[in-house]
Length: 230
Ligand SMILES: [Zn+2]
Image (tube, rainbow, N blue to C red):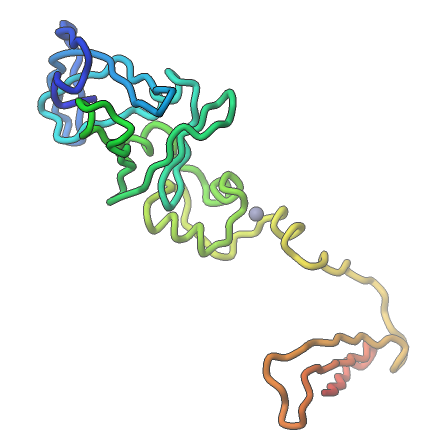
């Protein structure tokens, strides 16, 4: 959507009865329809069926329409966005995030479209429906809870449930742990020292007053008596 006919090529008067509905329920009048493009060196992205709505204060791009008309993907990140060609995987355009908006750099636009910008709210409405935190965790390549929490705080993702830092993920347990958990044992000791468990830990970042950096623990399975050696 654009706010002025100067922003589109060969605008045609809009004769339909439709309007653009905004948050407070008002319907904004559509005066013209036209096309334009985003220039990317030797290639360009088509912007088809642009609605000219004079009451608009910002020019907005529909991510769904942009990706459908140009067979590309629009990926959002905490630092900005990337538009990639779906067929070749080639990056067509990279841009920043600014004030929760994804502005298209001026050099990518024709002179008449220098004010064109892509609104974060539009992107969220079209392509990022609310999903559980666990789904976002898997979609984004299994990031840690701190990163996911930051994305929720910055309203870059819409979650349908409350964020929990204790979220459990099978894949992360298997891939990020240094070893798998021990299996439950049904063995029962019948006398002292029949079975002794031990664990060694270190090197400690802090050296003891005696100069030791490792400790080892022995636990007798029958009596549960613990021995601790530095
Ligand atoms: Zn995971």
